[in-house]
Image 1 (cartoon, helix red, strand yellow):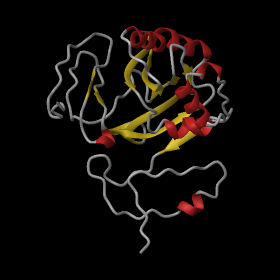
Image 2 (cartoon, helix red, strand yellow; image 1 turned 45 degrees about the vertical axis):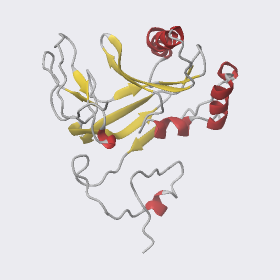
Image 3 (tube, rainbow, N blue to C red; image 1 turned 180 degrees about the horizontal axis):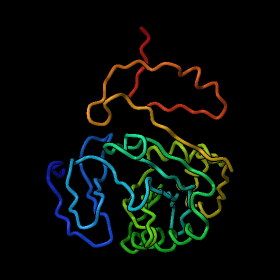
Image 4 (cartoon, helix red, strand yellow; image 1 turned 120 degrees about the vertical axis):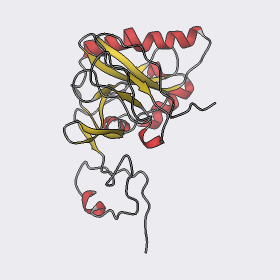
Length: 238
């Protein structure tokens, strides 16, 4: 049965860590509520997403998986609070970036060895065959990377900065997953960085205004390297 979105979670405070809980709310802001200090139970609205243990943003490596050997996609870092300077309520995501130097090779190997591979080994031990994208939401803390969440899909808005950097045709990646030949595929990435900025209607996420006109789309698309993605918009031909 679907959990009650108004039910408070019972959380035991733990020294050192910021505590959060997973909420069940509107799809646009589904996620985790986090509190600023240690030893404070996570209470609050049932929607939102997590803030990091130290500093703004969250790092999200994803893996394409078609067997016991995963293939890492480029990592991305996303931002959830609606206001500038990491202020205001949490959202479904206000932006993200991906760059070649976001995670060094040593840290990527550590994440793969200590988090991703044990997860896949556990699935395999239970007889679960997973083919697809495993999205791992991490907090990079002074005590090492810590798992916030898993998703069996690409993330939003992380996908908007990961796929533009991917030079290998994504359809080839999907075909390799389906065929079980991912170990023969070598992903090629752009050396350039990608940044996604979400433009949301006034009042988002609590009570966004509807029907607001969006102008300048055609002009923005003329700039080299600019991609525009739409969500919850419609074309008015009137």
